[in-house]
Length: 329
Image 1 (cartoon, helix red, strand yellow):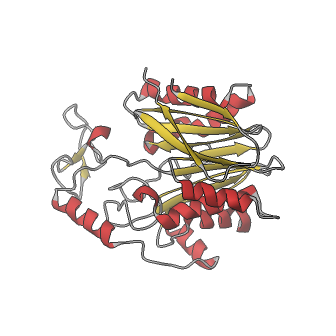
Image 2: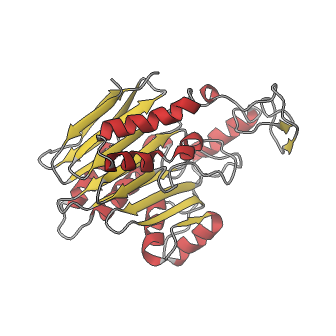
């Protein structure tokens, strides 16, 4: 069995991984009179940014090739289909807050890089150093180990034995990119969250600091609309976590929501999204989590032994962690 499929009462919050403080804070926000599901998702993702969940969210971890930590985030309103997203955000700790500012204070959907940072500062966010002693130490050790592993291929000098700067060289079978198993474990623990309030309004969001040792400027799946997350009040929402460079090619969150629109259950919708990716990338690691507008939720995963996710709903005093075994072709 590779999926989960459970019915809940509203309001409800679900999110990837056992980030229970994020789940709890988001749900508690939903209970405040006047608070929206968009508020809840922002609070939940912000909790992980502040707590630096698993080192994969927030500042001070996962330095890129240049030693800098940059952040990606997305937030989407299922009632209005409005979206705000940021990627490659520099020197701002509250990435999901900036994403919400894009949604509320612009007619755009997505800002990136130093321009996103300038927008954030204009909107009142504090500019701060995102380095930590830990991230500096991680980067120094990587640099001293000849920049291994990295995400370069078809370059010279040989990226499997040397640091850059790199130049292109003609492709040959002996010069392939590092395989996923060479990368450090637990690289993909993005928080993705979906909230459903008692008035049947929904929101979804994500936040991450991306891949460790990534090429500067790289954007994964988390802030990509329909890939990292997607939500529609008429149907439900979904979010994804895993090998973002692969997963964004299949927009799995949008795919899962569209399958639910056609009557597919949340677990089967997630499983179909996972299978589509595995067909082309059998070694990828990832998971999809979905919540339907009636409170039914499900998930599916691939490339791991199991995938845990967190849920809190009306009548529970604390979040619960559910763990599902992963799909194996």
